[in-house]
Length: 126
Length: 145
Image 1 (tube, rainbow over the protein chains, first blue to last red):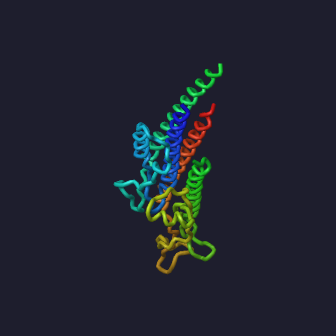
Image 2: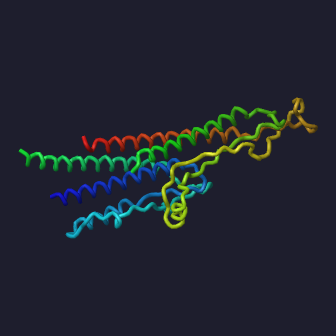
């Protein structure tokens, strides 16, 4: 039960960390929307989380942070402006909103999980 | 995960765009200034934005192999742009030269207006980002409720 709790909490920790980092990356992209020669970036959140979740289902899983590391990557294939900048502010705003909703969702789910565990603990007391 | 760092990025963006607005206002206000302290017409100012990056050795090396997130944007004001002055034909003007031309500031008002619009939009975008960060932080605080 407790190892299960650990693994679950680590999953949320990892997810929230990734979403928060993405928020920082998007903030930086938007702040630099008119910087010369700036290349917009993103993090490989989905890839890392997918790996994490598929490993999570296997029997001998232990939350090992070294193996699941987020990397910041340059966005490829975007049209570049005359000043060498390739930030698309509209798209960044959409990603920002999407990211925020995912973060909301994840905190809600985490709250729910914690409530479940709370119930288990308080029921066993009585 | 640092709340302050995330807000700093947007704060830098806000400051940079505000500075840009100031420079644009200065340019437009001086679009007809024919004589400045050095005797020349007003020369336009320009803002140069650059990304703020970590300055320590490790991240300098990292920048070659792995892109990292910056810490926002910094702004630099460049004065006295060397673009040629506009020449206005007005022989009766007290400052006209022998051929009857008056040297006007090298400010292009239309260009400045468009830059101002872009700066306003960019400022608003940064405000929105700041709000989003704040909301996310609030949600983090609500986990333990």
